[in-house]
Image (cartoon, rainbow, N blue to C red; front, side):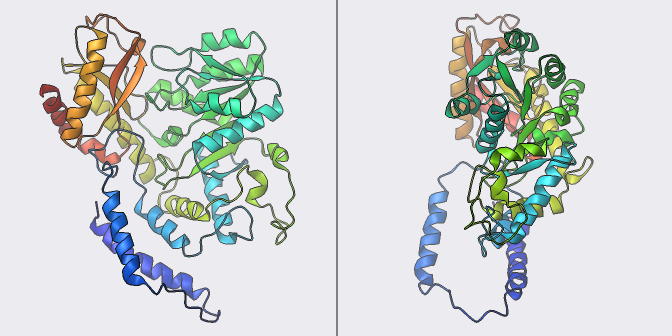
Length: 450
C-alpha cells in the first residue's frame, strides 16, 4: 500500500508544516503536545490493526464499488489543513480555505462551461442533490420530480424529505431514461423538474441529454443533472459519439452535481452542487449576526443548507486541481480516458469468451456481465458463486440485480424464468486497471472453473 512517493510525502508534509507554523511565529508559545505519547502510539497502532479489516480499496484487484483512492497531494493537503481545522461555514472559521473553495468550485464550473455560477462544496452527492431539488421545489412548488428507474435511489427519498411528489421514468435496454416515456409524463403537465443521470451507479449509463434538452424547450421543466459519478468524464477524449453528445449538452442544464470524492481523487466526503443561474442564491437568504460579523463579503454558509463544513476538504481539492488542472488533454483527463479504456478492454475480453454473457458496452468505466447458463435464475446463482470464488483469489467485484432486458438472454439461448438477473459488476476507476486486464481475466477464469 505504501510507495516511495508516500514515504517521501511525509518529508514534504514536514516542510509544509514548518512553513505553516512560520505564519504564526509572533504568537506566544503555547505547548499543546500530548503528554502521553506512548499511549497515543499504542492507540494509533491498534487503529492500524483494526483498519486491516477492509477490502484493498487502493489496489487494482479491488474493482467492485466506487471506491477510488485519494491522490497523495489530496491526502497531504487535507492533513496539513487539519493542523488549523478550518470551518468553511463563515469566513471567521476559514478565511483561507473559503477562498480556496471558491477557486476550486469555480474551476469545476468552468469544466462544464459555466463562467458564472452559484455553488459550493458539501458532504457528498446526496446533500448536493438535496440542495438542487430543494431549489427546484422553490421554483416550481407543487410540481413533481422525475428521474429514471436507474437513477440513484436518493432522488425518490429526497423528494419525500422535501415534500415533493416523485415519478419514475422507464428505461431503455441500456439503462438510460426513455425520452418517449418521459414525454408521456410531461404531457400531463405535472412535472416541474427532470433529473438526468450522467452515469448511473449500477451500469454507468448516461441519460440521452440532447433529447431531454429538446423536451425541455417544449415543456419548460427544470433540468437537473446528477453527474455525481460521471461528471468528470466530460474531460475524457475516448467516449463514444453518442455519450460525447450528452456531455456536450451538460452546460445547458439548470443545475448539476459532481462528486470530487469519486473521480475527483478526494477523500470522503466532498461533493459539489452548481447552479447555472446565481440568482437562486436568494432562496438561501438568512441572517446570523453572531456568525457573519467579520466581513461584508459573502460567506459560504449563506449559500448552503449545511452549516459547519470541513475547510480541509476544500484545501485538498484546491491542491489537487492545482497539481492536476481540469483541462482536456491534461494528466487528470488522461486518467479518466484510461479508466474508460480499461472498461472497454475488459468488456471486449468477456464478450469474446463463450462462458460469459455481457450486457451493453460500457459508456464510462462500469462493466456488467453474467455467466452463461440454461436459465436466467441459474445464471444468477452462478454469478454469486463466481463473485465469492474471485474474492478468495483477491479479486473483489460487485454483484448487481438488474432488469433482464439489459442482456440478450434469448440470443444466448437462456430461458427467461425471472425478470431480474443477478450479475457481476466491475468499476474500473483506477487508471492502473488498464494494465491489469490480463490479471483480472485470468482470476475470473480460475474462479469460474472452480
